[in-house]
Image (cartoon, rainbow, N blue to C red; front, top):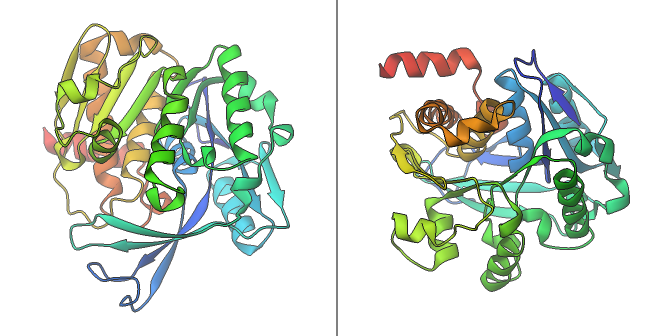
Length: 329
């Protein structure tokens, strides 16, 4: 599913994986059983990244599989509304569309309950990939949920192979969702199975703890995840901003204090804005001053996304980001 929106860049960012519907409680701080109602919000981390890029004026594509049902076609419509053309999208009639019920604690953090066994995204096969779209990607972005079961795992590995051979920058956000995995051990094994292929990796503070087995969010813990071919490692810290690590320098960028309602999609907004800024100039990664400016912008995007419920409905436009950045000055 190609998504374009008045692109200010020429490079195409291709995002691979799942798109689903989040059902978000109408009130925060209650359990699923206690929630009086739910808001229907389109989401799914890879799709969030694609639309985040498009909202900010970049050129993106989403590659995945949707259910041939009302929810699936609703999500296809969401992509189309973000100036997309259905060129990299497969439909399946034999599976439901993935759903996620997301409980919001009083602090805006989430707990998940998923319905996807099997769901359409799990059934994408290597033969269904639109390699023409993947082959022209300047950046290829993915998560780990598509590694859980076959045939989607093989499709994921094939897509990475095509993108890498074509010279794309590989971007990886594990987006850990433990309830979807058979076990924590298998989740860690599969997440790390493709770790050394990525050029850019973003993890949250919680994911850093999970992958390293350490409860310390520090440089030593982060750098234990470094691999020789990595160009940029990012650790997001919620409202505290992020830390960045490259071969030549490391540092941190402060976050922005906002009225947090729902943190769903904040990391995807951060990633989408980052990729949109570096897609045409990978050298930014090696220039600390320029990288810090890009990361300030990305942190503002993440912050804005937490001020509304749902992921895709909350993704910001460039003008909204400028308002936050100018306000911070």
